[in-house]
Structure formats: C-alpha cells, structure tokens
Length: 55
Image 1 (cartoon, one colour):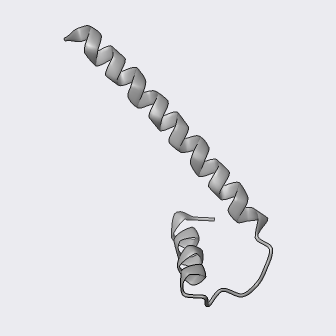
Image 2 (cartoon, one colour; image 1 turned 90 degrees about the horizontal axis):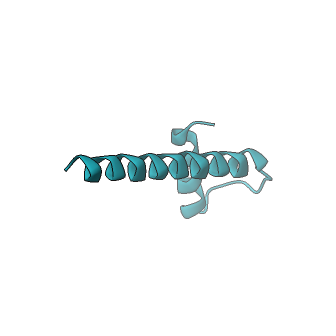
C-alpha cells in the first residue's frame, strides 16, 4: 500500500465514507512507517552527534 492509498483511506475515515472492512494491510503499513521513522530519527541523532564532534 502506498502513502497515497493510506492517505485516501484515512480521508475516507474522516469523511465517514469508508466501507466497513478489516484491513490488516493498513496495520502492517503503519508499523512499517513507524519502523522507517525510528530509523530516520536514529540517523538524525547519529548525524547530530557527528556534527557536534566536528564543531
């Protein structure tokens, strides 16, 4: 599932136009996004630490 599809799904929930269905793929996608975000946050911390040692 792409971020666009996830955004469309979320908007349909907000608009109350979504059909009732079980979507485990959305749970998986959210967990994948969380993992990616955590990896990016760790990378930022590494870069900030490296930057502070160079300054």
